[in-house]
Length: 204
Image (tube, rainbow, N blue to C red; front, side):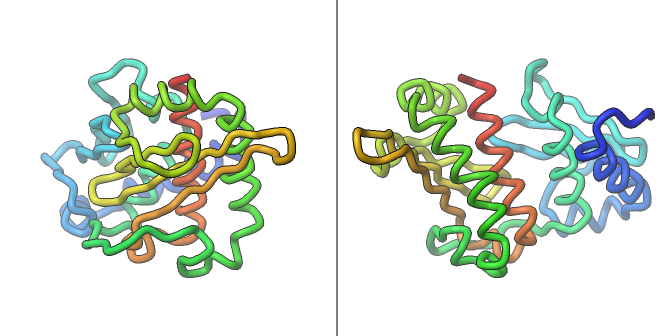
């Protein structure tokens, strides 16, 4: 494959190569996802995807499914199969900063997720809400508009946006179910926030 976008395609190619060497039965048990001998079945943001092994391919019943066109999202799914774990029970939601290594990554996370969400959705809260509803998200009573999503089975996220007014710029907050700390490294939690924002934006 000729690389057109180093930032996205080089990491994808790296994990695609590692994916070929994966023990599929071990991965299925560790991640808690079905494997039928040919493909893994993973549910991401309410959409079912099939990821073929060992020769990687991804498909979904919905022709316009978000992950089919988004390389960072596909890389995220590969990393989950390679390193992730089935979701454990969770007791509460936490901010990114409150989770392990959150303080170290808070700078990149703020720009890539919180600031992006604020200025993408904070001036278009009605369209944001409509997109979230279209995705089957659960409305929550926080922010000017707030919704709860299940990113992967058992891993939940909440996103809230606060509209701008005469004195303040728009703001946002994203919360994670605390079991993210066991299933994902901090950099993957950043990517999870980025994927959620991109998927909502794609529906607007």
